[in-house]
Amino acid sequence: MTDASLPEERGHAPARRSLTTLDDRTRRRNRAETRFRAYGIAAIATGLLFLAILLGSILFNGVGAFHQTFIKVPVYLDPAKLDKGGERQVEDIKKVSTFGYKPLIQQGLFDAVQEAGIDTPLESAKDMKQLLSASAAAQVRDTVIANPDLIGQTVEFRLLAASRVDGYLKGRVMREDVARDKNIDAEHLDLTDALREAGIVTKAFNWAFITGADASESRPEQAGLGVSMLGSFFMMLVVLALSLPIGVAASIYLEEFAPQNRFTDLIEVNISNLAAVPSIVFGILGLAAFIQFAHLPQSAPLVGGLTLTLMTLPTIVISTRASLKSVPPSIRDAALGVGASKMQAVFHHVLPMAMPGILTGTIIGLAQALGETAPLLLIGMVGYIATNYPDGLASGFMDPNSAMPAQIFEWAKRADPAYYERAWGGIIILLVFLLTMNIIAIILRRRFERRW
Image (cartoon, rainbow, N blue to C red; front, top):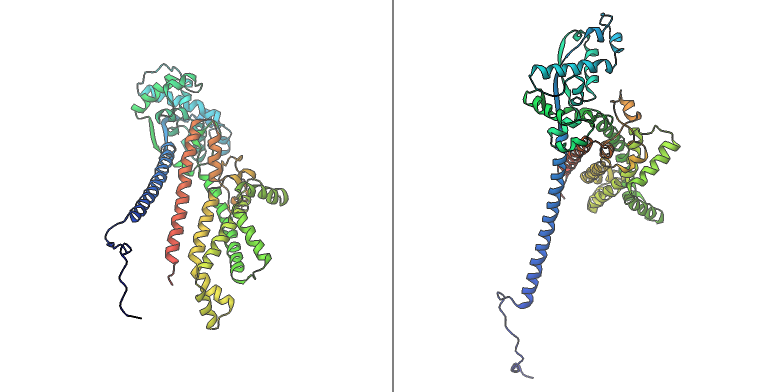
């Protein structure tokens, strides 16, 4: 035995490397990490590129729906045709249909063209009717009924132009296309250009697109999204009133109180499966349960809200349970340690801390329900044309109506290009609603979030 160390054998001495010197293995690893970061940046850039293309397409195709072409027409409200009795009684004035107003409007437009000194081959007032919307007569009639004292005067009305005229000024209708169009020809387009130079034809922001109602195939320029927005509002009230308390109560019971056995395991598996079920399946369920079995009115926002509630509940249950799980167990143990009951610990301590996640999940579920179309197909909300606002709260839930995604789907099916433009415009409004709801979810989460 000796303390002397044995001399190192020659040729077996360990290689000495500096920590600042990169070997081949480290270089390969660094190159792999660099490539991975480049792949990630490329993926993000590709996603942003496609997102920019999508948003650009939506804005490019839909922004025209927020501007509409109007024609200023001085109309002489002839008492001999509108009030033959001369007593200005509303009931007598209502007997005159829109057919009685059309000649007056056409003559007013013809007189405006003559007064502006515009040279046109259109020789009569009837030849110029293609420039005006089919809704012009109804607009003038409603104004006269609301104010009978206007009869006998020449009143300047701001009337909607026909969809072909509006499309021509927006670049949607080309001159080479009108050769095959029965609704308008080149002479009308020439007259439109002259009227625009004279200030008679103008473009302005179209508030009626946001506040108005749907229109028939012959009046696309009058169609609006307001009534269907109200239908979506009533549906969301039903979804919020039912899905939030039911979903939160079910989540609290399953997460905090239910025993772990085969029955609760079966419930959890079914909730996860329901979250992945296609939305049109919930539409079939709503059709069978609420319309065919319960005999609720078809196309009513109440039925739509109940159907969307079934679809939203799994999302809210899953997000609420995840929020409850994120609360540290020490919070529960501390509450129980100072004498609180199980229910007091849950409702006084766990639930307030989980509230940001619960609210976020609820709003995201509502946003998902707001944009759904497939369930509404099965309950008839697509086939109904929403033309009138509901009379009250009860009629808002029970009367037939449409919803924003269903209205957009209906417009996309129609033949007139003006409806196609309005479909894109409706998508812009729907995206604004969805973006607002998600911003609210983020604000609520940051406002109520607690640190531990």
